[in-house]
Structure formats: C-alpha cells, structure tokens
Image 1 (cartoon, one colour):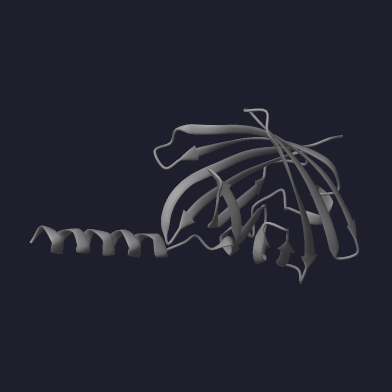
Image 2 (cartoon, helix red, strand yellow):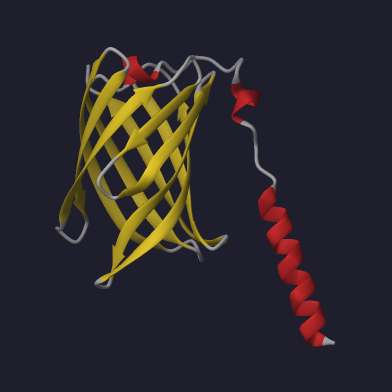
Length: 176
C-alpha cells in the first residue's frame, strides 16, 4: 500500500508542475520591455544559484556587452564566480516577431525560445552544465521582469526529468 501512495504522490507532484503562468498575462504591465533597447550597451548583473533546499551554493557577477544589428543581437556574457572561476557565454538572439525571440549559444542545446509581453520575458532552453567533471543537460525556465529603465530581475528554475534542481536569481542593471 505504501508503494501505491508513493506512486500517487509522485503523480500529483508531476501534475502540479504541468501548470504554468502564461507570459501573456503580463501584457499590460509597465514599463514595457523592449529587449533590443534594454540589451544594448553594457549591463552588469549579480546573481546566486540555490540548490533545491534553498541553500546558496554559488554567487556570481556578470558583465554583458550587448549590441544589435537589425533583428539580430549578440549578448557577450562574462561570468566571475565567488570561488574565483570565470566563464563566458555568447548568445546570438533573433527577433522572430513582436512577441517571440529565439537564441543560441555554444552551451545551449538547440534553440532557446523566448516570448515577451508587457514587462516580462520567458526563455526556455536546455543548457549543458558541467558539474564535478560531468556534463548534464539541464532544462531552464527563465523569467525576466523589467522593473524600470535600468533594472531587470531574473528568476530561473533548473530541472532535469521534471525534477527541480535549483534556482538562479539575477539582478541586471544597465550602465547609463
């Protein structure tokens, strides 16, 4: 009987994870996020990675050098971690239409898909993440919210096989 309860509880948890907020519900939120305007120039960010228990396991800063040419943008991200290590990711973004974007980077499998409404952008993608010498393919559900012309907040949930592994929280600030 306890096996049946465990299976039932697992099924309920899986179903609870299926529901998701639609980004369209933010369409009237202001200020409206113009991705090409916000990510143009230098942006600084500060972030933390928390494991599934909520413990902060890594702190980091990011400098993003961003530029656009027409509907194509390059975001050159330079990470520096609290342990002294450094990394870099270069995103190539493409505006598909008024609300949709796609993006690629060397450590992203396939394409990131983004949808923007009002002050909110949702990115979904699979990232190759190195942990203890092994590479894991991790799902990212990434939400960004424009607070004002300089500040944007970002919350990403990382999961594997539908199991939540942790969260990344970032605060972006555009340089004047």
